[in-house]
Image (cartoon, rainbow, N blue to C red; front, side, top):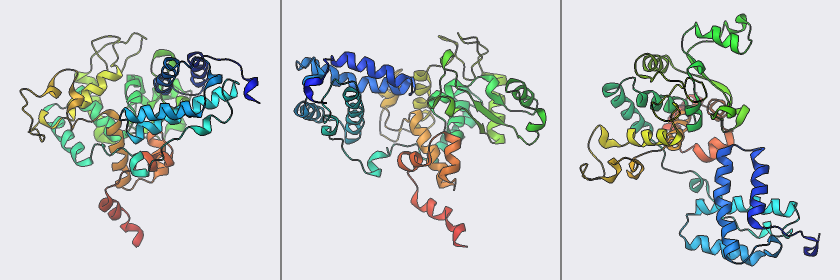
Length: 359
């Protein structure tokens, strides 16, 4: 097709069309990240007088690239943004709105493995210290249960938020509920051991899983974590039903009755601040430190988000000898993704985990 055969299309209209297509295949969280990245590009085009994608050329793409670099974006951020814009332009070509050679002119920075992997994971040593402090000073609290479960399973924030009481199989009697809900013969559960959780994709009631139905899975728990969850449920869980008529595991007395993602992030940032149970390692005055103010917890250099806890957990599992293929099913990620984005090993510990193979 020649450029003369292109059909006029406004950048923002094209963005809406593309996002509608993405919603059929991607999680809403992924679609939102796509929206923010490409909306900036569409806004820039319109401000620059380009209101018809037919007129977009390689020089325009180059100028946008240069502007973003001038904004001080990291190489990793540029890789994400420009990679998404290239996907968008591929769509524009498919709908006959942009020149066929345009996507190839997007220069996406190439990242090394070290650059692709964010080094701000929560270390196993710090995780153990946090767990010890929670067990000693705040046993079976909501913070304790959430953090311990996130570290033990490596699950995503959305999965943690999605859990209901009925997804917890902590004692033998709970297996009867599983047999009833999933129409499983009781004999088929004879060899199934508790405790475990069963993650469910429930998009119609505000708790989708990142990989939709492919994210549904049972996740085994240790006896210790199972007991912790039982104690939390019996003593400290808020006995509420959310706005969807469900009983969330991590409930809240505010809002819908289920903790929001932002609230969970805030709690994890607070729990991972060293000064909460000791001395600040950053020589800050705890009377004036802004990271101790509500809403600013993430400004502590030691604070870690749920994703960094997931990264640290997956790395810890690998350091303990879990093969990527086995771990992949537990944390709902491909072995290649684990190796590329999450596998940030303690090299000495990893060497020791290989010693058995020497014999």
